[in-house]
Image (cartoon, rainbow, N blue to C red):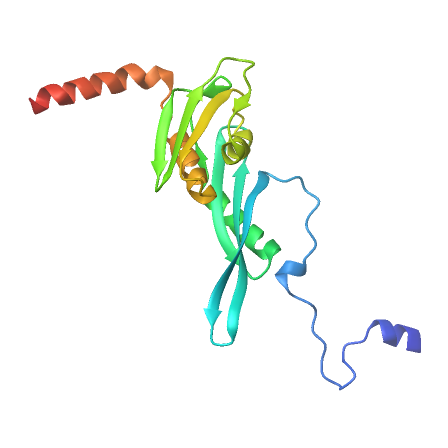
Length: 194
């Protein structure tokens, strides 16, 4: 074997120990296949924890994931650096995805949800209206496939709570075909209680 061939097939390092292949998962090159979901990083915060030697800095990411066809999810995660936090949050968002009901290009009905201090009001809108909403609500609704919506964020401005309130509002959507049956059920249950 020549020196050139031996150099390319090196299996031991300078100390004579066997060499290992680099098996770290985070260094694997991303596949060239198209992504199944769209991702938006809504917010990144630097958080710290006080330890004996000082403060330990970490990052908290809020990520929304959607499919543009009435599927959306939100995730929050922490990591030692920004990319790790965003990747973890995207994984959490994919696990917590919901499918909600739509009426053409808008939501089925008006909904008002509260999550902790955040209070979000969402209303269906006529075709051509567009998405009239604040930053966080607009980001999440943009991933859902809803094209017409009017929204107002009331109460707390905490981004995580607003995101969860939007998801809860979408989860509560009842299709128009089921409206009559739900109203009838409510009336019959009231009569039975009397």
